[in-house]
Length: 599
Image 1 (cartoon, rainbow, N blue to C red):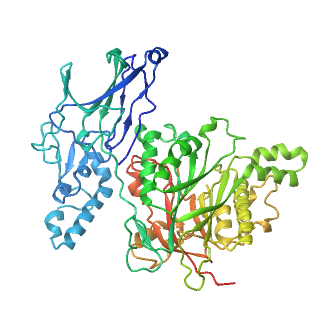
Image 2 (image 1 turned 30 degrees about the horizontal axis):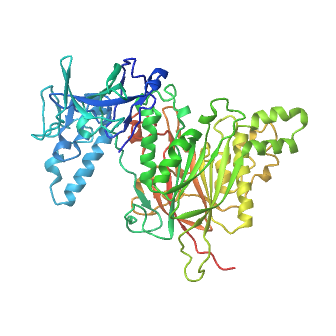
Image 3 (image 1 turned 90 degrees about the vertical axis):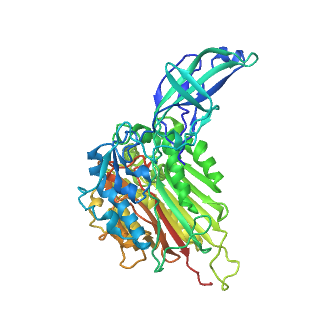
């Protein structure tokens, strides 16, 4: 269920303020009262009622553009018993543009029919790859079908209010309301009145808010976990939805797109209601919780959103939370909206041992003090100080796969979560930040025999110098990125190395025969870099910026979350969209700790 809250609608109950907003089925809506000093003095409180307008028929909503009323229905979907909500389209062009994605629904239904021994031709012989033969019917104003009516079952409560020739049915009487499937296609009215606490009489005008027609909540196709360790079947799930293996664990890395960056100017192709934080936060939470990862690494988490939303909400799902906010030497906005890195882990799977916070600003100060002449330090700091951070967490597993040879041996795990600087003209700064992080991890590795994971948004494409350093352990001294080094912080180039045996978790998708279901994934990989074709997809850019690296001497990859294909995302132009609430996609890998030899 998706949830939004209309907390931002600060409506004074005595002003008679009227406005409209978008309402999504299955989403909690909160009506917030702002009481004046007069109200507080007289001990009044808000009374909130919700009504749904009566309609002769329910309105079908376009499956591609949920804010638009449908005029076409794909009869192939109806006959194939595909969920009826997916069969509607607002215009012929909408249906034509969406056909390549829409036909996948037909193909899946056809496969299911074949498995049951029915003849595919009976239902699908008339369809072809061009989409020109798809049957569709115009939905007239008087049209009705079983999918649009509720038969003889009473749909509305008995309470009725008639005003200005309109008939409204009361559907709620509290400060929160969750629109149901019955509300789809209808307008909701929110009424708020101030009531005297003693006399119970209304004081002043009734405050009213009207929504647009309720639209169905977007429902993206769930992403599957694909085995890559040579298994001959899909990995079994336990009752909690996780991989049924006590010796494995899953790690999620996800840049969730901070609200401060999610502007209408930048993402003008995304509907404003789908770009709003009240909508996106619930959609993101649903997605994150649905993956049921044991460890969750999030980037671009605003400090206020961490404290007020993600930490308490994920706590309800059994996660302990750790957070590192970016420094604010460059950022000049509201301190509460500074973003950072948040790491969550399941309390029933891991316990917290130690936390390290990496502030690249401090490292920049130390570097300039040691290497840069006094006259140039201000210029050097202006280039290096960018407020980026990393959060390193050492966890102890509450499970073991060490076997009888190592009874009682502690299984530690080190997880680094970072967000590297975004500016493309600061290639030297990006590489220096990654090198600084890796050198810190090397120190931890030298003090303990511990598997490592390095997760995050590195703002570096495959083949770049930062990616080469991570994946290859060094940077070729002739790499073009090294030309940009005005401060000389990358010299000598021979120092651009590390000793951690890091491997990109998604590289198994590039191997032939990696596992069942990996063929489509291989087509979504770059064969030259063994990385996904993209993890970030906007109107103006598509490419890979996010990674999960692991130490291959101590961990093996068992399964990977399937990648998304660009075609399916482009039906909404790009990310973010009503279905996916970030401009990045989530990466998730299942790992197994290798048994370590006794020393």
